[in-house]
Length: 233
Image (cartoon, rainbow, N blue to C red):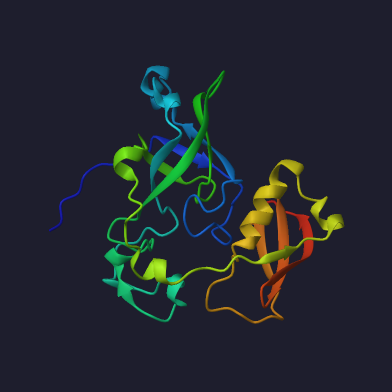
């Protein structure tokens, strides 16, 4: 029988992604995305953050909270390969693993001491859904964590093309100004599943309080509609 160890949720992230669809495939792909890490009351002691402001980047250790399951598969179908080729789960960053744990490197913009929430981390480039549980925060050490000579396996061989984005000004005005740059950058990364290429299909994505509908033909993504996000509950 496998041993288990307790894991404490120390924080949750607040991001513009209420759903999985549209989240960048890796952290750091869209620097314009802003998010905050809000800690649970037990972990709001400012002493625990002393010195963290001296780092430009941090690691977030987190849980794929929407992918927790009892069983696991030794192989998965990475979107990077079109969802048709199976690879070993440990050769991928798939959420469907024995332990649904994710790892993201993000830029630390600042450490804010909030009057009610205590220390709050402002980060950019995160690839996490709103409300994702955080297990740990660690400083990124460039002298040991960065490996320019590293080989990226099949993930490096399959390059994602950046799309041109046609976002009509009248529709862009419906997006809060502080979120426009991030949204356009996310769309340019092509949020569609790799196996969906129908140019006539219209996709929908929730982001920062709005619903964005778009289509893609060749290398051009065209925004068709922007409406207020539907309220849940």
